[in-house]
Every structure is written in C-alpha cells, then in structure tokens.
Image (cartoon, rainbow, N blue to C red; front, side):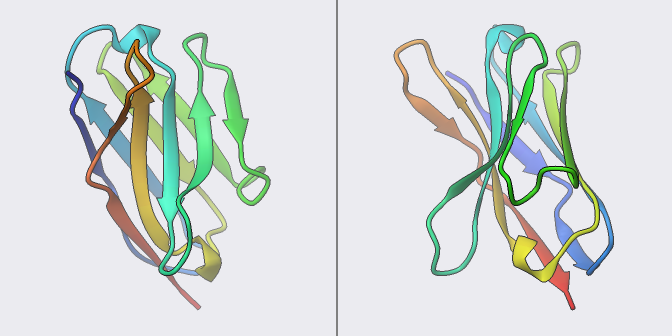
Length: 116
C-alpha cells in the first residue's frame, strides 16, 4: 500500500514559480517510478513529468524547459519545480506511482492557479 500526499500548490501570477512536493509512504520508494499529472477543468488528466528510478526525467512538451522533476529517496519525496508559469498551467496536480501489479496510486492533488 502506498499513500501519496501532495503539497505546494497555490495562487501565483503568470511568470512566477512554484515547487510542488509529493511525500510517499510505504516501502521501496527508491524502486518506484514517480510521476506528476494534472487535470484542468473540463479536460482529461495528463502527464506533466515522470522520473525513473535512476533519476531520468520525462517531460510533457507543454512544460519542457520550464519544469524540473527531481526525487529525494532518503525523504521518499518527489518534487516538481515549475517556472515561467502560464495561465494554461492552472490545474489540480496529482502525484502518481504504480504498484508491482500495475495498479495506479494517486494522491488527492494540489491546486495550482496561475493568474494572468
């Protein structure tokens, strides 16, 4: 069983920055691929960034060059640093990982609102 708790969302002006955090409970954090997804009102949930067990990141084109995903295995935490935020980045951001059977685990999300 894995529990994921996101934090760090909030209201920011366009061009600003935020750092999201996701604290994971349970074992084997260092062996888990961790991801950040987001869901804007009326839209489907989409991948923002993912980080592998070796630290290799993957980014959506929409955030590439503006965001950095990182992980601290000692703290069982994954981060998403977002810079040059745009109004279209407004969404609920969710932390994700998969169990050995492929079952998805999700946090409850943290709201990011970017004002123009």
